[in-house]
Image (tube, helix red, strand yellow):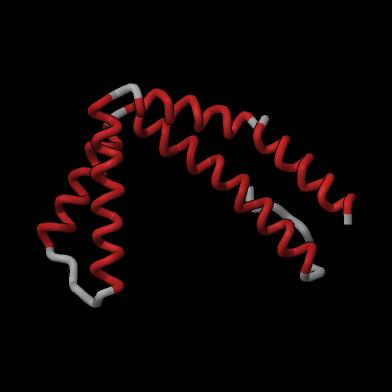
Length: 116
C-alpha cells in the first residue's frame, strides 16, 4: 500500500514540476495582470455557466445569447494573452487526461497508451 502512495506522491511532484503546468501558470498570471483579458475570461465563464444552467432547466438558448457568446469567444481568440492561456491550459489538461486514461487502462487490464 505504501508503495502506491509513494508513487502517487512522486507523480504529483512530477506534475507540479512539469513544463505544461509552469507554462499554464505563467499564462494565467499574464491574463490576471491584464484587466481587459481577465474581464473577458470572467464574462465567458459566467456566460458558459448560465448556458449550462439554462440547458439543465430545459430552457432554450436564444439566438442573441448564442451570438453574444460567439462574439466574446472571437474577441478572446484575438487577444494573444488569452489565446496563450487557453492553449497552455488545454496542454496541461491533456497531460492529466492521458494520466487518467493510463490509470484506467492499467486498472482494467488493457494496453496503456496516452493519446498525445
